[in-house]
Structure formats: C-alpha cells, structure tokens
Image (cartoon, rainbow, N blue to C red):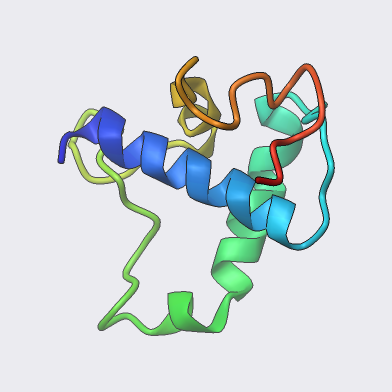
Length: 94
C-alpha cells in the first residue's frame, strides 16, 4: 500500500468514525483548526501510548517517509469515496 492509499484509508476511517458517533457534517474546519485536536486525541488514546504497538501516527507522508501531517489526510478523499463532499454537505451515513 502506498502513501496515498494509507492516507485515503485514514481519511475514510476518520470520517466513518465521526459518522458512527453521530457527526452529521459538513466538515467546516480548516486544517490548522482541527489538526491540533486530532493530535491531542491521538496522544490521549490509550493504545497510542503503547510504544510497542503505536509508536507514532505514521502513514508515510513526510520527507523521511515515516510521518504524516494531519492536514494531508482529508486532501486524499476522492470523488469515488462515499465521503466525497464531506466539506460541502452531510456525511454519508450509509
């Protein structure tokens, strides 16, 4: 799986998770408004503290190929995704 595929899977998982907990959308935040909250939630998630399993949020988006900026995640949602238009209207709950 390449970097874009990993980012796309992460984006769709994030949007599906938000939908599962009741978020309706549309997504109205710029990357600088939500990525700090994303990293705080990631750091506070108990499994993320287990350095044997989750060493860091890494899906291969940086120059060293190891880490990604949270802002890169949602840029990968494609028109074929059920979450296309996540920033323009309600999220697809199906």
